[in-house]
Length: 99
Image 1: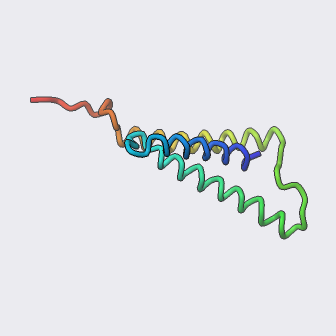
Image 2 (image 1 turned 90 degrees about the vertical axis):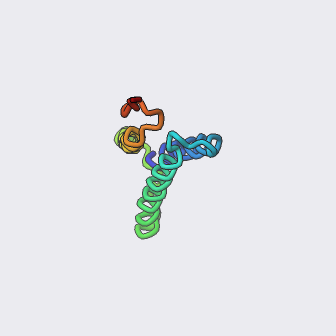
Image 3 (image 1 turned 180 degrees about the vertical axis):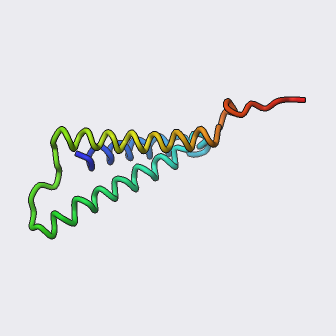
């Protein structure tokens, strides 16, 4: 389930970034790269045991796997939000004081 949810989130983030690529003030490119990196990591994590152990279950569809995939997605969104707050694209946190 990790792979399915993270790949879906990565595809949505990539589509949003592509639509707003000229003006990427919300750093959707960073979110897209983080989600694709996580998706590739999970794909390798599932593929290596599948090959070495001779098959078995490739997609783990359990409540624990679903919960873990949403936790991984929440962490990626949290890191993206922290980076966005540090950049402060609208200048809300660091208001410019005019003399």
